[in-house]
Image 1 (tube, rainbow, N blue to C red):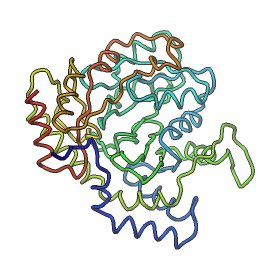
Image 2: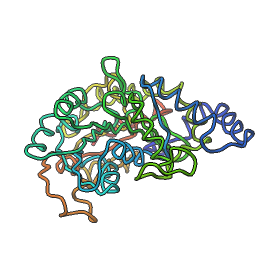
Image 3: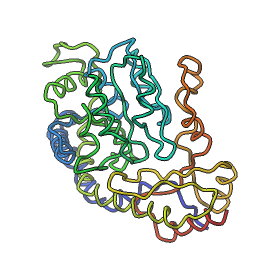
Image 4: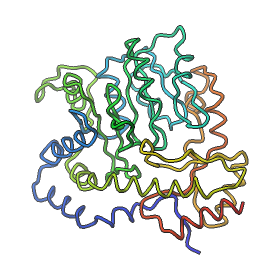
Length: 364
């Protein structure tokens, strides 16, 4: 019996293989590999897709968060509010600046930062910025968070690494806050064939700072006018490949949603707690269920030839390198870390594979 993988990138890429090959050949034939026509083309196309004025290509999603925070004026010693259940990526960026993560607990149903949790975390504590993660493909309570923070002069940065194309009331991920930070890691809904990232914003001055920060702090070649600069550039090859994929993103997202809807409707085991119904604000990057006896459930699926994973098993404040440095009471975050399981949900998944996952889950 062939194993059902957690993901299979070949299926999506093979569906547009000719376009990808043509895009790669165009870069090779042009002989220009950094900050050229392909990068400008993708930045313009992605900005238009997200309905924002600017998209700035960078090397990866973690750099995107760090550079967005730097452009927002966050400095060493500042507090930045974020969640602790999203894989340590925002924490990496915050600590690279020398700032301090202030962890906010999450809603137990959505697994996302909720306004009430943020308000409790900020009581009597000044923060320089809030990083809101749209986890697993679902938009957080972003409008309410942006409104609340706006009244207090707090910058909101969206972590959109898992939410390309998620939309609510006509607005897309990356267009709500001061900036939206995207990863194009190969497994993402819009994935490159290597590392890549971007930052979206409607603020032209903010965009200028980002373009300087991504390349050493230059305002012109070899002239460093801004501190905190990095070497973080989106190369021409990845930009060209992403441009080839972008027109397919909405259809790919709907395919993922349809698989997720099948799971929501058809997985009925009483010990498996599923996500809520999938709307346009959820692009089903990952399908995560909750199960109190997680290890036994995973062994059962493994015996039935179905791959699983945990996104993510260790909350940020419990990571060995940082445990004890930052005190936080994160009851829901820690409970989720003990119970969550990711099951297969990816583009190109076959009907027989979907039915096998459902059958195995119900047969546990």
